Length: 211
Ligand code: ADP
Ligand code: MG
Ligand code: MG
Image (cartoon, rainbow, N blue to C red):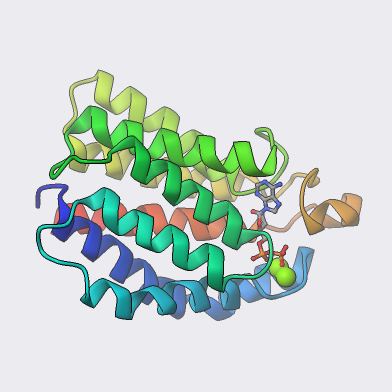
């Protein structure tokens, strides 16, 4: 499908569904290197946006939906992930504001602004073992795919593949940001939960465009 408001509806709704299905798995990852609530946090935030999506007019833009999601996550999700994802969606929304349909460069701008929002908010660098380690490879892959002439759907698919690989790559690392950083070497061997939720969410974005 076109990357338009129907895509944004499908992206957010499927994210809510997938995060709910993976709630226990994300909690388990967070139990290994954090406080065990990442699945719960993400599920609560995305469930809270669903009734608001019903009220969004068909004439809304993808940016307006992402702004609604951002505000909901910031107000309903306690913990690190709420403000981090909230800022990501807010900056992503601003990057595509006004556009009814997103072309390849707009999809790259959306992803890249989302990642920049997380970095602005959380100050993590690549390799710190956070969600940035899924977002940054996703943005790099999106830029590369767009430069090679891919359209929005293939750009999102490339980003999703890279985010999944990025999440897996966090496993052998020591964490330098967030709760996991208190564990030192005990974080080694565990995947970062936020990187994993990012991989799930970006896969939903790609799948929504492939419908
Ligand atoms: P909390 O740690 O407050 O319980 P969550 O469990 O919901 O919050 O989220 C934890 C995730 O947040 C981590 O797995 C990591 O990906 C991400 N995170 C934590 N701190 C930062 C940061 N400074 N920058 C980027 N991501 C971070
Ligand atoms: Mg936690
Ligand atoms: Mg917590």
